[in-house]
Amino acid sequence: MRLSTHGDTLDLLRRWGLPVELHWRRCAGVGELLAFCQEWAERRRTLEFETDGVVIKVDRLSDRRALGATSKCPRWAVAFKFPAEQKTTLLKKIEVNVGRTGAVTPFAVLEPVTIAGSTVSMATLHNADDIARKNIREGDWVVVEKAGDVIPRVVAPVLSRRPAGAEPWQMPDVCPRCGAALHREEGEAVWRCENTSCPARLQRGLEHFASRSAMNIEGLGDSLIAQLIAQKLVTDSADLYALSADALAGLTSTSTRGDGRLIERRFGEKNAVKVVAEIERSRSNELWRLMYGLGIRHIGEHSAQVLAQAFPSVDALRDASVEQLQDTQEVGPVLAASVRSWFDEPRNLTLVERLRRAGVRMERSAEEQTALRSGGPLQGRTYVLTGTLASMSRDDATAAIERLGGKVAGSVSRKTAGVVVGAEAGSKADKARELGVPLLDEAAFRALIAELDRA
Ligand SMILES: [Zn+2]
Image 1 (cartoon, protein in one colour):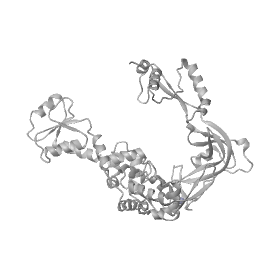
Image 2 (tube, protein in one colour):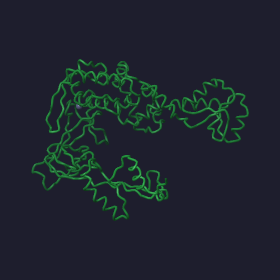
Image 3 (tube, helix red, strand yellow):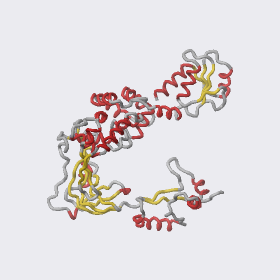
């Protein structure tokens, strides 16, 4: 069966019983397209799921092929984003939040208002400069929008409704949690609490450590972490590994119900046993999870994976120079400097040692090692060995290539990536020269392996 349009494809999938989004329509001409987008800007509220736009695609598959793609996206599809929904409400107060790096960020406490189907009572305000530039003050009526229907933000104040006597907002001088003076570096917009034992920073740091995309410790949520800190049961992530189910069971956690009321609840034996088991399990997590969980500035989930592919252990990362870090693909100067300065901090080295003593895996797991090998830097490349290598046996050379994802073949072809030439090499070297296949002498081969092993 040959399908000639996208619409036919969707119909067929639906007939086969596969789940297909049913609200699509075939439109002829720009007028129909615009009408469709406008119609759904309102009708989307009636859907059972959230949506922020419409995807417009060329229907005929042959037209798609003719249009092709740029390096970034296809030329036959485009997204229409619905305009963000805006509402006006009262900005009751501006408060600040302390992040795990100590960054102090202001946010707006709003008179609750319904935007895009959900109740909004808080909105981001980015930073102090932004508040000053937009001239936002406590007590103002403000326009709030949900951009991309995700995080609400304050767009602007309604100056005509500003109450008499509203004063420009000032960033507090001290951290609201620990009272340490706030600092801001030259040229930076962000103010920071630099007290490394600040309970707010500790809280956010542990939330990050336990989060799904880091160490993935299920059940270790925000309120439990707050309890652990308040009861002085943890002062850093390594302390988590010494927690007993008994200690956890006696804690009370509070949570906020939908109507805003707080409920207090004893953590309980059953939950405690579960969380302790989860913490225990996290000891043998993949290396990248730990590298991410450490909370080094600028290391995101993806860069943690990149680093764990390049450095086989936390120790290797710790010992890497800025240059070595920067030599890693996808690692830029900011990330490299951030990693280096994190490990230069004695306090952080102590944390790493404490985690090690707590039995947390500090190197790649066997699974990671295997995955890395199957997708190694020499994947898809075939080498041929000829002659005798002085410093390694043929088996060792083969193992080194295979470890990096490459293959070793017996004969040279145009597709051979390289021929490793030892002493008294025979006709294979000649064949390689004839076909223009690169030759590697022993030193070049060893350098290649060493370099890829390091990477
Ligand atoms: Zn603080």
